[in-house]
Image 1 (cartoon, rainbow, N blue to C red):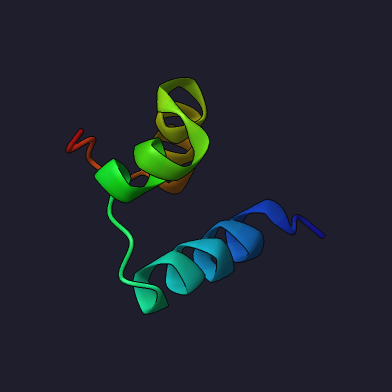
Image 2 (cartoon, one colour; image 1 turned 90 degrees about the vertical axis):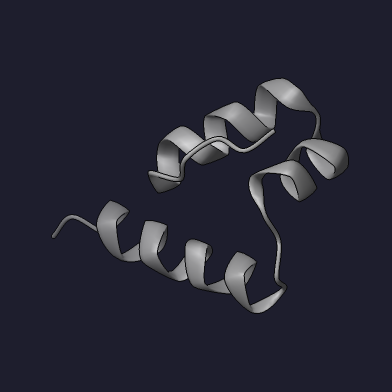
Amino acid sequence: MDLVPELRTQFGEVLRALDWSSADLEQRVGESAALNFCDYLGWERKI
């Protein structure tokens, strides 16, 4: 059972519930980590 797609979906939903954008991620975790999160979630980078 591949849990990665399900975890990706749940993590993205949590960030959307917090109303976080890719710019918010960068501010909170740094540019490198934000880029990794955006790639992982399939988000367009808006930093």
